Image 1 (cartoon, one colour):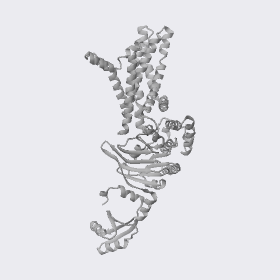
Image 2 (image 1 turned 90 degrees about the horizontal axis):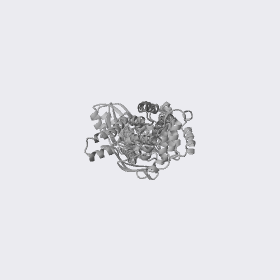
Image 3 (image 1 turned 180 degrees about the vertical axis):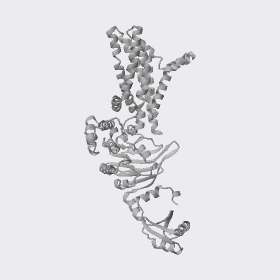
Image 4 (image 1 turned 135 degrees about the vertical axis):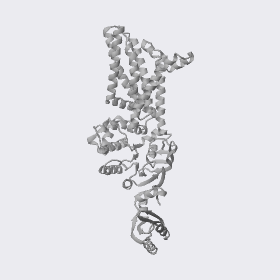
Length: 236
Length: 309
């Protein structure tokens, strides 16, 4: 765990030192800010629905960009040789890389806390619902980062990594649309894989345990795939 | 300290390392010598656990690299051919990261950074971003990261490639100093490097070990073997045939415009050769005795037979 922490700190620091992270955070804040403002003035309600519903799309997209460098850049620079020959487990490398990107996600979400604070200044928001919404966004964000990290282990090209991650994420998000055309049994199965299925509950302020378990398992699954993919490169 | 047994590595269908075995004792500096593409880098990558072998065993400090990878890796300092540097970090933060990753404690890592910066003469560059460093300094940072955790085994892949001659000399000096009390395996395709820095050499070609001996013994081979180079005005094929029939001649090669005759050690056939050429009615344009260098031995061992007409 100490090793994962060392790698996570290094990743987080290099995010802070790279212009890319600032651009990503800036775009995220700009997009969600506009949508928060427009939905708040349209519906005249003290909720962060508008922010959550739009935030999740920009998060999917930006997660692919945040994670694209994690392993792909190491392969390009040759530093992967340093990591894989250090007395560190492959799982610790992946855990560290993942945590580093989760720190950045947390920073992004914390920077949006002024939306609910604004609501508090002008009304009486439901804090429970807001917390549930943030939890949902954070869980989806973690899943997206795990998918992106997995994609980054597949290639030395960051662009390829981002495109693959984006492809997997949008496929997982949109797979629910297909469910409407399928027999009920199959539809249930497809919805089980859909990234979009449980998210509306969180937006409404409901914390569904199945939703939490779903996002956590999907995150763990992709982290596991990332570890296997990294291991696999030793056998090539 | 390093034990390699029946190591084989295939990349898909291509055989990169073909059943090699060798050992490096504690405190030895051994050179792994071979032309480009001989399998040096692949061998080193397997030794350091970066790649898994298709077959065979690797033991570092009596830990098996397959079953006890973490323990084995703790004993290794590794400088890959492409120096693994994060270009967005300063030298200090890079060494700090590598030191911690290799298990140094917070207090220990600080004092070790000072040590390796001193050893590798990086004092003025410790707070410079890696991307601003010249190739030679990057190489030094590479050496610094390899020794930061005081490993007892050092594996250096082409440590002097692409740096200027003065830096090459400094790097070799550094390697000799590091060799005190450490086991070092160093790969190179530059011959003088081996004779300057190593005590023993393993020559590999096309994934196989073709020779393995102490430098002195190879040098003995050098002075023992003898070559005579002559230029004869006559049909090349017939001259070759005639020379081959001289007693004591081991091998005759024709490389325009010279014939090169190899003889047994301690045998001087210059007289017989002159006589043979004269008797056949050709004229002898030149004749000289050539000492065999390490270079020649290397070529002899690594160049294919078919080019060796």
